[in-house]
Image (cartoon, rainbow, N blue to C red; front, side, top):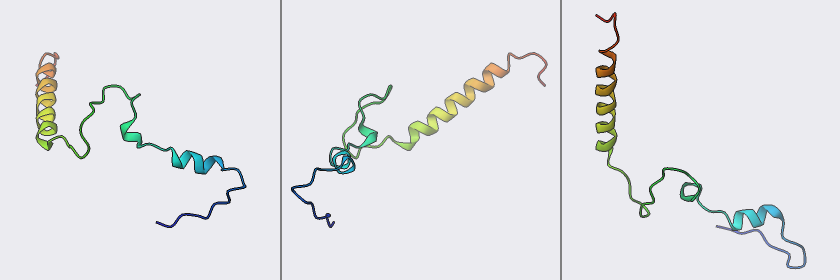
Length: 70
């Protein structure tokens, strides 16, 4: 990666300062309900499948209490 030449006598611009101190937004500490995991760790897709099946079953069972259904 090539870097732009910098003039040591000129002040550093705001954009360069922001880019230099940027952090990954996915690792921000101020996001609620986020579990911090090790770098590269991913949740198994089966958890998402299970959540979908569980929520779908809950919705169907709750809708069975609605009067006027078939």
